[in-house]
Amino acid sequence: MTAQLLTEEFFFAHDDSQAVVGNSLATREEREAALDGALAPGATRAHGAGDRARAEGPDPFRLCFERDLDRIKHSTAFRRLAGKCQVFIAPADDHLRTRLTHAIEVAQVAVAVARSARLNVALTEAIALGHDCGHGPAGHASETAFSAFLPGGYDHAVYGADVTVARLNLCVETLDGIRNHSWRRPAPATPEGEVVSWADRIAYVCHDFEDAVRAGIVSPADLPDEVGRVIGTRRSQQLNTLVVALLQAIASTGRVGMAKTPADALAAFRQFNYERIYLRPASCQQADRVIALLRQLVECFADAPGRIPSVEAGEHGPVTPGSGSAFALAVNHVSGMTDRYALALAVDLLGWHPDRLPRGV
Image (cartoon, rainbow, N blue to C red):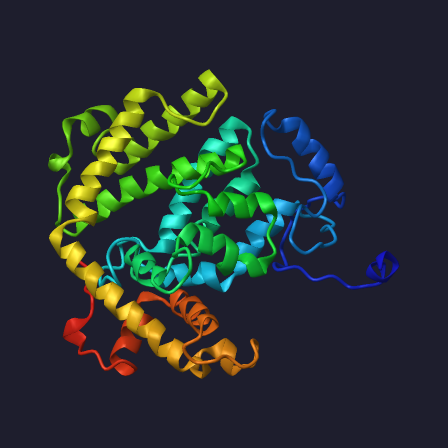
């Protein structure tokens, strides 16, 4: 291959380019060795192809968690997060967050902590960007909707790791971080996963409040004194305070946590959001509509599984209408839909009047 390249003519993007890199590339093994020396004692090391459900050969240049990160970024599930709401369903205001922008903001917070704490940045970012790939359309109400059809219920974190991104054959550490990022789940097995758990809560509490202010639901003056006094009323100030609090705790204890004062303020902030944003009467009414809509879609596809693209393509063999496998495939299909696609199907397939559809704000 090298001899062939020596005889090739090379082309460059700009005729006047003067940039010179040098032609000494770092192999994956060299990069692994350099990273080992730079990481904190408890950080997760990257070696070889990584521990995966299906064995693979290692990449010549990329570290195993970098491959995971690339696979998540290129995945359909990650791209569809752009069409799934964070709080407000299919909003007309393009500045309100989606699941995609939420995932990016979680990654920003998590990577900021991981870099300074000398943790594995690629693993941290992979977990952060993949952590919500299991979410269905129209917010957390989708979990209630889908739980009726699956033994053990539907948890977006578990479903995301075990079903949605399982096909990507990610490393066990990446899947563990995705599966256990929610605080109601067992602790992640890596410090990188712990960082993402905190980053998720920090990001959504801060940006959901900012979106609610933009939507006219609350104002900065409504924040409890404990929150404004300790972590501030502006998102940039809040994020900086909470990231520094995480790093200070790591420096003091060697563990991923937060001192009581900022942790209590974060908890009070989250409680305020639940009372004034997530569980306000209008939001609960919309959740009821979401649950009814998604359940009807699942039942429709389970009764006629031939409408499910993967079944139509013959990927599963014959599927009996109304069977457990039909409902599992229907949940998988509907959970992958964007908000607007699910709402459109409610009208076109289920015959819903547009006035019945859930509204964004």
